[in-house]
Amino acid sequence: MVMTTDLAKRSIDYRRKILKYIFAAGAGHTGGSLSCVDILNVLYNRVLNVGPGNFKSSDRDRFIQSKGHTVEALYVVLADRGFFPEEDLSTLCKYQSHYIGHPTKKVNGIEQNTGALGHGLPIAVGNAIAAKMDEKQYRVFTLLGDGELPEGSNWEAALTAAHYNLDNLCAIIDYNKLQISGTTKEVCNTWPIDSKFESFGWAVKHVDGHDFNDLMKTFDALPFTSGKPNLIIAHTIKGRGISFMENQLAWHHGVPDAKQFELAMQELDDQDKKIKLAS
Amino acid sequence: MGAVANSDIKTGKPNLEVFSSTLQQLAAGDRNVVVVTSDSRGSAKLVPFAQRYPKQLVEIGIAEQNLVGVAAGLASAGKKAFAVSPACFLTARALEQIKNDVAYSDNPVKLIGISAGVSYGALGSTHHSLHDFAVLRAINNLIVAAPADNYETAEAITQAAALSKPVYLRFGKKNMPDLNCPDEFEFGKGRIIKPGNDIAFVATGETVYPALLAANALESTYNISASVISMHTIKPLDIALIESIASTCRAIVTVEEHSIHGGLGEACASLLMQGGFRLRFRIVGIPDEYTVTGSQADIFNHYGISENGLRETALKLLKV
Image (cartoon, rainbow over all chains, first blue to last red; front, side, top):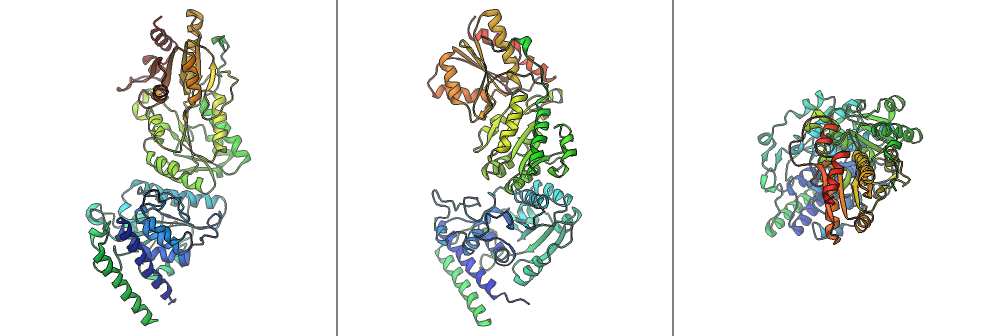
C-alpha cells in the first residue's frame, strides 16, 4: 500500500476549487468534474510525463480530455501543476476569457480543442501512431465519458487502435453511469463495455476511479498486454464527494446556490479533518 | 490578345495523378510526410506511394470521421498529414472533425478531396460533392482550393505541405489540359489565364478549361474580349483581382463544379455588392435540383458548363 494521503488532500482541494469556480461563473459541469477529478489527480501527479517545463517537448506524454464538458476539473489540476496561475480561473466563462466551458489550446497545458463528443479517441490514436512511427517512448492518454460511447467515431478509432497495435495508447472511461437525460443504461445501453472493447482487440481493466491505490496500480501495469491498446473502465460516482450531489442527475450541469456551496465546503472541510486525524 | 489558341492547348494528366507523384517527391525528402487513406489508395492513385513508402501511409479503412480525427492527431504530433478520401464523403461525413479537430484546433492537416464535384458522374448524388465549398467557406481557419491544371495541382500540394495551416484541396480525375499560364501559383491569388476587357470568366477547378474554350470562341467569332481567371482558391478569395476585373469588364460569369449556392459565385457576388460594383453578373454551376444523371461531361453540358453553354451565357449577358 503506497501512501496516498497527499493525493487525497489534493483531491479535496481540487473539489473545493471546482465548486468555487463553477459557483462564481454560475455555470459548469459539476457532477462529471467531481467524478473524473481523482483520475486526473493521479494522472497529472503520478503518471504523466508532462508539466509546464516540457509541454513543448515532442517527448511529453499526451493527455486529451474527450469529455470536454468537465473542463473545470482539468483547469484546477493544470493550475495546480503550474501550467497557469490559478487566479486566471476567476475569468471562467467570462467575456473574452480563454477559460471557456470546454478545453482549448489557448490554455497552457491543453493538447486539443474538444467539446463535441467522440473526438478524443481518434486524435489520441493519431498521436499514438505518430509515436510508433517516430519510435518515441511517450504515451497517449484520453479520458472519455460513458455517455459519449454511442458516438460511432469511438468505435472507428477503437478498430484502428487495435489494427496498429497501439499499446502506447490508454483510454480511460469515466464510468459514472449517468448522462444528461438519465442513466446510460436508460439512454443507450452500452454495457458490457469491457467485452465489446476486448472483442475489438483491446486489453481492458476495471478500476475504482476514486481509489488512488487502485488507480496507481492499474496505471503502473501499462501496457496490460504487449501489442494491444489499453482501456481502463474507471467506476466512478457522479458528484463524488458532496453527499447531496452524488448520483443525482440534476447535478450534471447543476450550479450550487450560496447555501449549497457553503454546505459543500463544510463537507469537504470535514473530509479534510478526517484525513489529518488519520495521518 | 488570346493567350492560348485552342489548338495549342496540350493535354495533361489527371490532377489526381499529379497529386500522387508530387506526394511521392515530397515523401522522398521528408519522412514526416504521411498519407492517411480510407480504402482510397487505388482511387487516389496512391498505390505507388504505398509501395515505395509503406511506413508513411496509414490505412484507416472506410471510416471518414476517424480518418480526419487520426490525421489531426498525426498533425499535432508533427506529421505533415494528408487525409485522402472522395470529396463527397470527406467533407460531409467528417465535417465535424474538419471543423473541430482540424480548423478550430489548428492542426495543419491537408484535406484532399478526390474525384470532386461530379467527377463520379453516373454514380449519382451520393458520390457528388456540390456542397464542399459552401460548408467549408463557413469554417474559420481553412484554406479552400480547387487547382485547375497539373501545374496548379503540383504547386498546391507542395505549398500546402510547407504551410503550418489546415488546407482543403479538391480535384477530379479527368485529364486536364495545360493552361499554359505564366502566372505563378500562390494560395489566395487568382491566375489570369487569358486577359480581356469586355467580359470575365471567373472559374475554378475543372471548369477553367471550358471557360477558356468559350473565351477563345467569343473572341474569334464575336470579337468580344473575354478574360479567364483560374480562381483556384475559394477562400481566402483574391479580392484585389476580382475588384480589378470588375473595374475593367462589363460583365462577370462565375463558373464552378458546385451548387450555385454558397460557392465561388456567391462569394464573388457578395464581394462585388459590398464593394459597390454594378455590372452584369451570372453564376454558372449546378442548380438547386436533383442533379441530372450521366457522366461528368453530360452533367457539364446539361447545365451549360461547357464551351457552348458558357459562350451562350456570355452572349445573353452582354445582350449580343
